[in-house]
Length: 304
Image 1: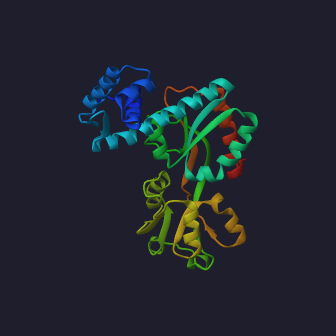
Image 2: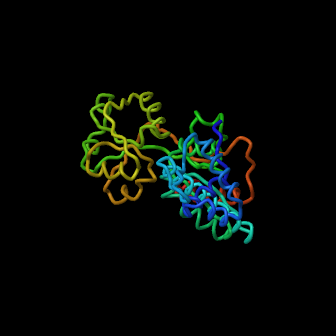
Image 3: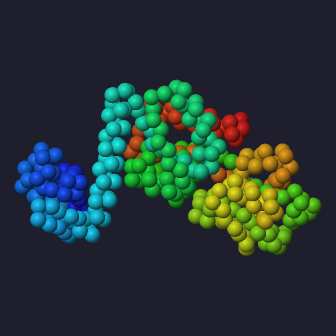
């Protein structure tokens, strides 16, 4: 493992750049001049390069020093921010919760869940990361999240226990004047003529479709993948292809008649829930958040 600089070395280097003087730096940090010199020498040894050039009593940064200064300042700023937040939590009885959610859940489930949660847990600060399920699980591995909300994927449950909260079905959608509205496709060749518009090439949803559709005789010979379900609806409304989305996401468009639903029989099923680390036990704060999140997603899907 690469040896990393110590915080005191970073601070000494940053102050040295600001003062351009070892003597002034020592005064600012309440150190001896020899301690500042030793700190810089150790830092340069760790990095394997020269950071400072001395010009008489003054010093200037080398090109390596310029690069390292930028990252050193960012590192110290991040640590200072973290310390400030922790002090706030300690002083005022606050708690924190780090969650990851998919883009779909962030738009349609999270707002209502957060509103209800904050009414009960006003002193909890929730940090939210948005991304696909696969990306969230990587962050869960790295300890950046307490929980990750998304779709069930068998590939990841060996490392991350999954708790199901709800399930939905996928369906075809078309523009009102699409040929399917007059004559439903009845053979594989009919489906093969269409351009399907689906969600994310590496997403869990797309993996489900790749397994499910061939099993019922539907081949996706021409596919356009989009980064969001909303984008799929917009493309379909322009009659650029046949979309595959969840029914609840296009419910308003079905009622207005701007999009038309077509069943997939049998329908591909998706399971929504959350992942946690294997060794994790839920705190009371986390259990409360889960309760409101589950209520929000159940209301959205109109589950019995």
